Length: 279
Image (tube, rainbow, N blue to C red; front, top):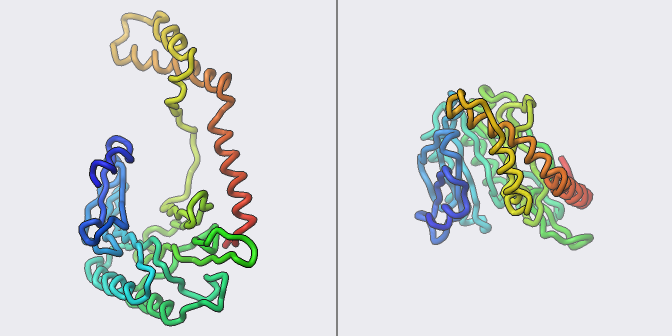
């Protein structure tokens, strides 16, 4: 597992997994070490409980991957009740694939609603003082990816929080994104509203494969700069001078390929939006 994850994650990232609690790793949590401080509090075959400190605030997060069978999920509800005692008065956010809905309207085929399983889920959330966070996007987070009368969708993935979380992170919300190639929709959670700002410069590795890249780099780097500057200032000036050259390379030969990727994703989202229900 460690070798595989090191190949998948960017340099400087850490991760936890729950493979020790079962035969396979159903949950993997990864983060940038230069970002939040993350520590593992407990783990089981259906849940991981972690403490996170970020921007001078500490909260507890539970990542869930519930079993398909209702009888097996009872252990998850017990684990969450145990975690409730560990969390205490700290802000707590609980998110993931619960593999069960709360209400009948969270299934496209209302006739297959399992009231007993939903009741177990709702009772657990009531016992631990959790409620759904403000959520936008798709209503059904899972589908069988079929069309017409064969379509089946459910809200199996969700984000719930306790009262302490709602008091401290008043602007937080969850967004259910388009599923892409998966049968599940990804969920994102924002704690603070986006304030905007200047778009950061990004270096794309595919630039180095262009036949003109070496010439552009050498020409920009070799141009004279005040030799009396310190080595660090010289490096800064060279990199700053190279930036518009690389942006021109991207515009001339790749036609802003990142914008075309965004446009393709937007078209895919439009198609998927037309097939699914949105909150």
